[in-house]
Image (cartoon, rainbow, N blue to C red; front, side, top):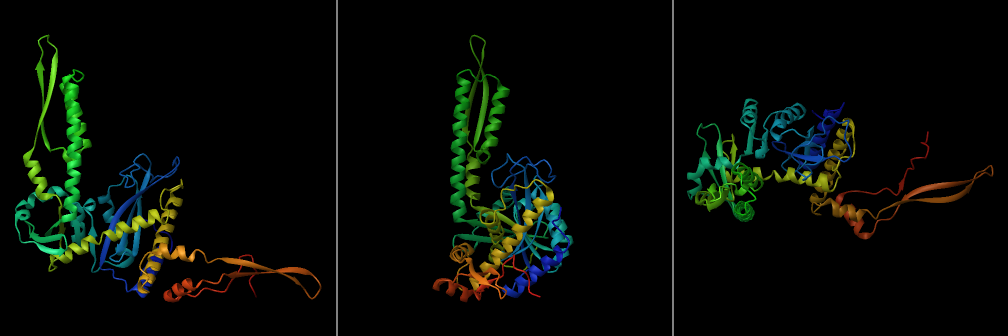
Length: 417
């Protein structure tokens, strides 16, 4: 369901306009990603609080999913709140329609991760005249095995090579990428899973040889659970479980396995490689890859929202309050990016937390003065003053183009007529 409220469309258009005035906002490339945030408490009266795939490793708690659209510089343009059990791919049509309704549909290039990809979603984007750069499931690499072994790669940046390959139907272009760092990480991960898988096979064989595991069906189920748990190494071994009759007539099981060399060779070939697909034409492979990698801006936005802006966990129990909580965090992130943009323009980096810590020592205080009216009535005068910034703080304020007031109006002070 969309997170619209009366006036919210105008507010978001105003937000886009102000970002554009301050930072020359570019909105032709839109980065879309989904995260989840879990609840604390019983959560009995919130229809969108559901258990689902948790990005916070809190599958034991109900959650909501949040879809966020940001520009290539990470400035937020819009968001939607979805039920916690909704698959990422089912959110795409809603978020695209929402953004087009608020900001128009022309010249949009959508960048999404493989979790958003479905043939239905891609056809939906093509029908609307939208362009896209999306990730694909790793299994699709098998269709491009020949291209993986060829040497006509182009350097996108140090440690990353890319190449364009045509699709069979000619409607899209596929981009192969391989990363040295990603290869090292995936190879280490595979070896870790293979080690766990083989340790589990040794335990299974020991249970069979000791007679504690005699049923062939139960042994197969145990092997299945082992493969599910260590799925990255589920095809690393060819496992055989067979019955061995004993002289006394009692059934005995024997488990054996050998390394699957084809799996090992395939892993050596594809580890560190991934496949993108796009309907953009006339764009060189390095540029396509760089545009896709900008998805990290959306991931970074979620990290800031969770770690700095307290979007998790959700303590509210009613749906309207949950949506309001997310809305406030969205606006807080917009303010965070505004401050980061000012800092970057002033040559102060782009880490607002450092600046906020520096400004946290600036306080306001009340000066209380005794007074007496012309009629002889004694009273007190309260003046709320802002402390004088230190030299370093004055420098930061000057570079940001900000001026602190010397006095603040008290909330309990009556307005002057």
